[in-house]
Length: 316
Image 1 (cartoon, rainbow, N blue to C red):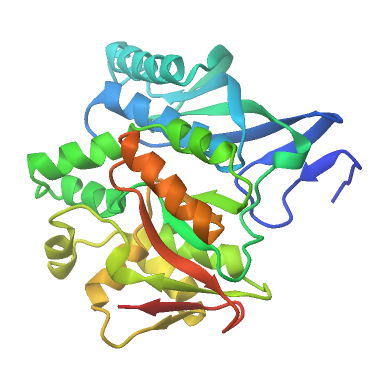
Image 2 (image 1 turned 135 degrees about the vertical axis):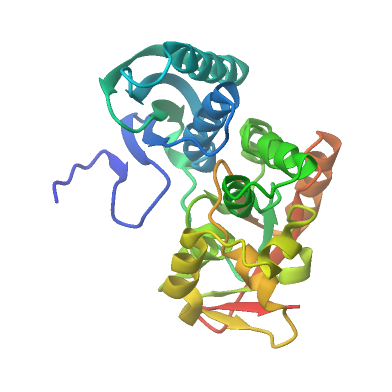
């Protein structure tokens, strides 16, 4: 693997984006993300794809500036109006984020895909990694869980309208405001965004091979109303099963915790919330500011512990 003294964050520790220092007070953040549709409406899909791609920059503590479209489209079998609606949804979300679209690339493909490459900026001293929590730090999750399960239910034709709407609102809500609110705090020690590995999968990354552990209050973690019934009815994404199989040995589960709730905590998310690790006093201050700003689902869901090192205690 090549190295460079100006490379602050590379591929070593599964961080959310790469960071390269340009000068003493400026670094760029680079990330890329694209995927197949998870909702039926093209415009909403465009919004979700952009929200998801920008989230990696917010998770590093940075500000996204420019983006380039990535498009795979079956031009021979699908009306081009669908592509127009996708791109319009993406453009509207970029406009909301203050991000400038400067180009992109498209290819003909049998399977529709859309996303972005994104460039952002940050001060080199303010880069947030997905590890670095200190004993006593609190954890704030800024969005409710459940988008993977709802997407699976949608494909099966059993997701009701209110649940679909709740999931779509969650996936099209930028992490911009949450990132701005945490930016000026002194004790933010780590951050990541919750995506394909699920809440517990990404939480495990934050303490893997670390000198600290983590305690999660399962009953404090926000998730969509009606989700538990879907899980009880075995509406479970394949990604959830993979996440659980991969990380379960790192999680110590309270026997009182329902299995359905454990499943929800492993649900793969799209455009999920931020998981912020910060000092106890500032955590309560930040939580109040988030609620005042309309980030209603934000919750303190756990804390960093001295032991067991590299493990998560899931209590109920």
